[in-house]
Length: 414
Image (cartoon, rainbow, N blue to C red):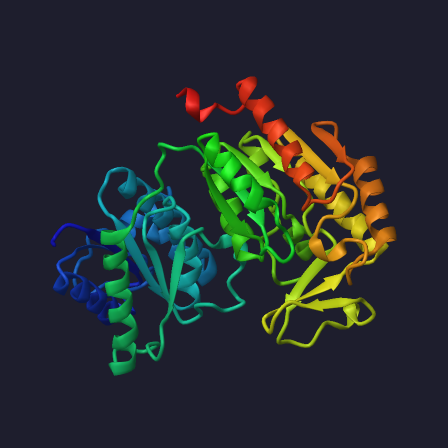
């Protein structure tokens, strides 16, 4: 099965043994490799397929400029720019089917740029000493990045390190052989939600959208799900979005580390993708359930979802801030935006009689949303709850009108 080529990327001056071992593992399993050196000061033991000079020059710079900067951070950013551009070009030229990047903090910083340079469906693995660390911001992760902890390998090969590296080599080659890339035959609608205990609209909407000829991808909006959603929207992966769970925006502005990044609710609009938006679970801020709650939330009601995740219920003023944030993010949209505002509530737990219901908070949010809604947004005020069937029907009416007007192409007419 000598049929797949994997890019192996790293600083071959200091990590030659580890990177060469990865290449050997891939080749033993029948794969091919191309090597890219992103080091600055030293030279690899053997020439790589793409040298550090080629990497720097790809980004309109040079190794001399990196060295003369006198700063390792600046130097590595020069290499990161060049590496991302080189990898993007090589992918468009059909030179590889998967990539793997090895590094510590410096190499991981570069790896995050490199993995964002290729689209969804290209296996991309980062083998890092800081895999899964809070040092890695959600906003820089490509939607399908895989991370493997580089255990015990900071200085040279050993049996523990080889176990991690060999698994990584097998994983990226196996993924390159097995991956089914997104099928462009059916246009995709991206939808955000939570589980059915909080939000239920997707169980009604998904089959209805599929009847209309769309493929539907539902993203779990708990930080990384929203990050993947925004990443794919930035790649024009969707013909339309049903962004009905925007809780991550409130998480971000209120300082939760369960964030999808500062660009939440913007990427579809910036690319002119039609947006249907509703503020699902806007009233909650997620926090890490196994950590002590920050003091700022001490007087707030809370909902323990499980041992990993708890949610804080926002007060009136905090909800007004979230309303402002929605308006601010949506105001930058270049395409059509319809904001659906269900005035009877935006999550199952806030229905009258349920434990997180706050009539004053809901009224304040709705009032602030109406007051601050930007002129480019078509606001539709709905006398219903977000989990009512009438909410779903209102969303479908908007979509059907967009299809009738040619704003969203009808898949069944293609």
